[in-house]
Image (cartoon, rainbow, N blue to C red; front, side, top):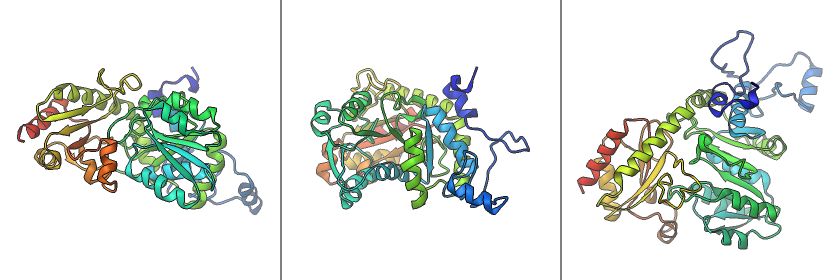
Length: 390
């Protein structure tokens, strides 16, 4: 049984492992910013063309970071990966490395606030045209992705309203027009991901979320074909300084070992919470793709680790629920072992106007709930208790 036949769970534990002469079981942490060469000629040769296990400078690559890149590529089914300093460094790197002045990008309108900033503010400064569509409307994609479009960008599951995009259909539309498909796959997670299979050319993760999964480190990942990753992506990232630190890569490697166990447990708990809260008299809306009646269910029946609820009574009621919670923590992260509640309208998406928030379904009463590893019954009781106090 070769490595290519290993399951995701096995790849997450063993993929990409490199051992030193000491034969250590835990991956070695190489805390070094540079590397020595046996001769001047060897240094010259390495700068001309380094081999797969030859390193020059930590900004270009590092053995610990390379293990993470190889492991996540094997897990995702991608040819290669580049590890970045944060999830947003990965989004920016994937877009900027592949675009130039005069290009056109079509993006889904429902995106994380920082992604919107890159698309609306940064890329247009450098002559990139950006158009937005309702990501769930394939006719809008067909109309907007005209011949000559350079790329499309979307979150496979949007933040925070959990719209699930038909990634395969959008990829077909994009490729027919000659456009690359760049997707942010954070909510789908590497456990449930089918992005490469569905036609994504580049897949972006915030490793800060499920891959670390325990609130310790920032990190990001860009995955795709060898030619893209080792070509424009690596060139752009190594010269602009967005590389992941070796220590963070080591933490992410440890996180990958338990990724599938954690994510499947969190998704099962999220489904139990969604079932328990439907119906609840203080909720006007509950969004969870893992519920058979949800619009996203056909594309993402696994549901993921996040659900969103809309509390009747607007922001005051939503704040009341947040402040009454005991187990759930108020924060803006997700994919953590600890359950987290977020009010997107005043935090992650606060820079959007009230009209933009309303168009995206980000209402004053909306709460995003990232389910952790606590006992589901305790999380349900905590939520019900907070809602019942309204």
